[in-house]
Image (tube, rainbow, N blue to C red; front, top):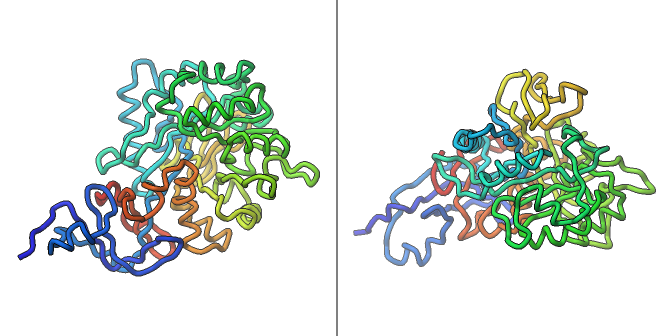
Length: 404
């Protein structure tokens, strides 16, 4: 007689997206992890308690979104006085709502703000595990600004922008982090390398455990390459809020063609509004394994048209897909979900199903150095899964082995 192992789940009849291919297989989950059944319970003649039939669905790693400004009525860049508990409750509401899109890990993103905002909010955005009750895992904060270009501010309030003449000391002071100890919350930072004090601070930022991205910038291609040499590893929403491509100085976009240094990853908003499909194809063809899909989602995601906030800026959702700054009509983030971005990416580039999925799973995990536990279905990885049909629509979502 076999003895049940209560914590083991077996998923059958699935097409696993693993090792850059799709193949028919089964998957075993235990204690929130993907496990190898051999040596765990097969040798003891035991059987899993729970068997889930995927019915031929694609089974992929949970999707990862590195740029979420807010959603479902909540703005991550706003926290009223004494409202820390309410902030955390709303953050969990967003995290839980993201699961329906197959998003199991994300980065709350703060746009350019005054120091007091960072000092109040960043301590609340430390990494925390996801689960069925609290929602998607929080990977830490993405701070987009305030060390960005005045000319390429996008929807960021210009009065909040800063330079850093004293280098890392100025940066640490603005965010309220230590100059000598690894910060707990900031895991990704968007900066413009041409801003005073930033270029020489990139190495210090990486030593503090922060992944550096370049964006909202007028950097020349030479400045962009230098930033990558110093440790920057990502381009923030490629094509948006940067100087346009010019054949004599392609700027940040020119990093897609560099052969002198390793090409960085690049985030891209694939909502069909921020980037023309032709531009997307050019980027993808130049550097297919560097593509990282981000939503740049704002408060209005999941809500009807109307006026909302993006930090201290009033924005307006027009129709179902476009968001603009009320004052000047500039694009102001997006409202497309990450699963829709995956579908659009496949449609616009003509890439394979696996390649589309990897742009929202493996690639962001590789950027952050967490591919041992996120972005794959390898043995030992977190049991964050999404079931998809052949059109990449979400059927089921699992987080930490729990079916949502």
